[in-house]
Image (cartoon, rainbow, N blue to C red; front, side, top):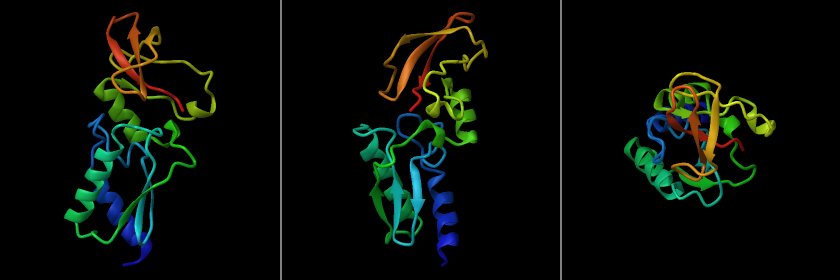
Length: 156
């Protein structure tokens, strides 16, 4: 099988592997799967020390093995570090539908941008309640219109 065909097939398989902390989005949509080579799948955790990294690797390994890709290694690359810009457009929409405010595309390059729309009602009148949300990669916000709390992926 050619490398481009292998890459397409492996990415299709891994598109079914959910992120263990945010199961509405796959590891491919989240941008964790960085590269598919003839001998390996390269992943980058959302941040160094992410507690879900081992579960992600196990989910990827099970999916690869289950589809006949036992020969592919899983390698972790920390450089360049993962960025929220790697979340796909489809992934951003899935996060919003799940109730998590995704960072806008390009927000990682402009860390001063703090526009956060409520994923429930769309209001821009929101505030950060805590820099720490349900997982270390998210912050807790609240909508000032519908009054609902929600997580937001931190831009990085």
